[in-house]
Image (cartoon, rainbow, N blue to C red):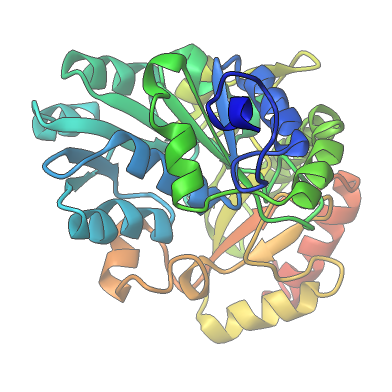
Length: 361
């Protein structure tokens, strides 16, 4: 026991500090991201919090993407400010804007590989170059991509977060997260994870090990289907906007093509599609109700089954109406998480909903 507590021999003392299941899952996460280190946490937000408390201190500065998930944005602005950490919110897809606000006290630049919910794609290599020139780290939330689609560490990022609740687990039965990085950034991570109680339960880790065993198959199927669904929805008269980085006319298409990995020889752009219905909230509700239960309403994503979400009333509800509109989020904005069902089945259900709100479409 003395040797274990002194760190002179390997083993387990207390589940909050680690257990065999979390070690096995961390090993899988390291392999997926070609990382030197990985820590499994009780949620995706816990993984982001671990990055904050292990890498930042009072007086530091962070550059934060304006397109981050609402709670992530709050963590790195409002909550960070309570710890004496300054922040600047900027469009991280505009490299010139990032370059203007970064300075010698900046320690982290944070963005998402594919932004929630408008699916903008970050230039990871470009952001890494800017961050490293100021001796800052680049932290990427890779949840909308998964390591099957993108491995940010290989593109220059220093830290990567995954909400394993979503695509990596893939079965909507756990809440879990992971932080991956390299040894140079890892000194404070294990102690911070234990001290702040950011541990993951053994059962959740066991379930996620099961989910990761099929991750490549699931993501491959879902991404190919998503691309087909996006192509079939393109130009639909009931939609005023359609966002999917795999469409050739999408502004992010070239960058996505360059950064994202290949699956079975096909370009891979993720399983998320966002579109805007040409109508008000009443029309949106009718559309969502028409799809149920075949395509259920679900604020989360990454299940085996295709699900639908309404960003204005879920993950971005805490923002003001004007702020949401600045981000392109409107009452008619719909987010689809494509599952592994046949594309024809998914499109038939979508067409039923679109016909219900626009019979002539």
